[in-house]
Image (tube, rainbow, N blue to C red; front, top):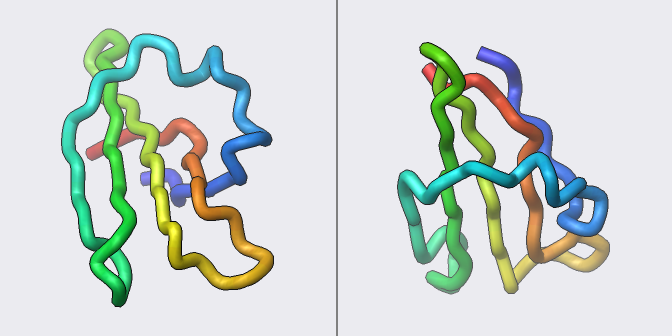
Length: 75
């Protein structure tokens, strides 16, 4: 499986996210029980591709509160 590489949301080309649907939502992802992870997926032939969107409003200074992974193959 390809390693997940996250980028600040402003670096993402919105076209890459077309055709994805929400497969899973996880809330309370940090010590303050805020934030969430949205797992998006789509089928291409026999392969399931994924993109993860992480929102962490309690991020450290210098970190982006909204990060989006590059497209990866889900197993």
